[in-house]
Each structure stands twice: as structure tokens, then as C-alpha cells.
Image (cartoon, rainbow, N blue to C red; front, side, top):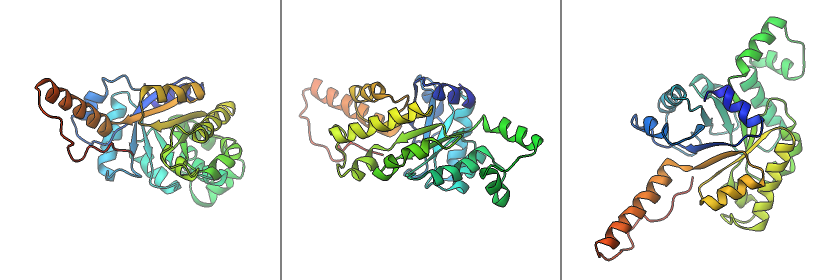
Length: 271
């Protein structure tokens, strides 16, 4: 799958599946490409990846038919253009709370390389020369703009946020949203679930994709899809590795009749 195909499916309401990739190992892309994913999610907000690392990751995964969506450290248009220059198929901007922020990001993603006063004029609906307009429209089809909805103010402003032209999807950040609701990590709480469903339904009604990055079990993931999500980022490579290795080691010890010990470092990761 390439970036335009992923964007087409997302806006059509079809479900698309990815995972967070933390490891920059050159052995990883081949293994990941065999897992049935539609895209990969690379996080530069919380994960310690330098610019060279994530750019190599972007170009490698793109070559394997897995468009990379890269989360930038903040809702900064300059950071958005940087990850696009580095090979990202799409930008995920964290902790967005206003339509004004989305509009600025729209300028970076949809009208790149236009900047400064000329970009401000275009965003204010000034006429664009036909040749430049055709150039921008052609290039914009290869880029995606996704914003994280992670707070109560963001939900309150969601009508205005999803009305910004050129927005492809909103993505719930469950940890920050649960904290904003006063329910830290209470992912089964009715108020948290109601907030997620409101985000999904409102976005989908506006013709925008709706998703969540979640690391819980299958039943929880299915519940989000039933609520209206069609962009699912399931867990992360490091979390899946931890769970699988821990489970297999416990099975080996049990089968060998060894005492199961409470090993240090068992706490489940969350990103």
C-alpha cells in the first residue's frame, strides 16, 4: 500500500491497522512487513529517535509498502515539514486543541513548500495561480495530516477542528485524555469510553478518519472499532516483545517444574 491508497481508505471509512515501531534495527522492517499491517507509526514525541534514524525508517518502510505516519514533538508546522522532508507519508501532531493549530499544520502539509506571508494569504483564501495550484494539489495527495485529540478542551473544540479542510483523521491519545478527564489510565471507565465514542462519531460524521493508539487486549480494540474508529494503532513493537517473551519464559519455567519468581521489571510498558 502507498500513501495515497492509505489516505483514500481512511477517508472512505475503511479500517486501517498499524503499530508503533520503536526499534530502528535494520532487521526489523522485513519482519514487520510480514505482519499484515497497513502502515507503521513512528513516534518522535516520546521515543528517543534521532532525525537520521527515523528518516531511514520512513524510507525503508515506504519501500516495503508500509506508509510511515510520524508523530512530531509538538504541533509545530516547522516540525511537520521536517518529517515530510525526511520521508514521512503523514504527520501526526500531538495535543491539538484548536482549529487554528490545525489550520497552521494544514499550511505546512498541504501547501509545502510555500511559507511566510504567501502561505498566510493562501490560508486566508487568496487566489492561487493555476500552475502553482495544480502543483500543490498534485503533491498534497501524497501527504496525510492527523491530529491527536488528548484533552477535554480538544473535544469541546472538535466541531471546529474537523471542519478544517485537508484534515485526514483525528487520533485519540488515551493516556493524556484519561488524565484530562481526571481518570488517569481508567480506560474502562464509562466517561472515558463515552469521550472516545464522541470523538469517533463526530469525526466520521464530518468525513474525517477517527482512530486511537491503544495497547490493550483484543476485546478492547474491537470495542473501539465498534464505536466508530477506523484507524487503529495496536500496541508497539517493544510492548509486544515484552509480553510474548514474558509469557513464553513463564511457560518454560512452569513446564520444567521451576518456581515462578517475581522478576524485576515486569511492569507493562505504556507509550
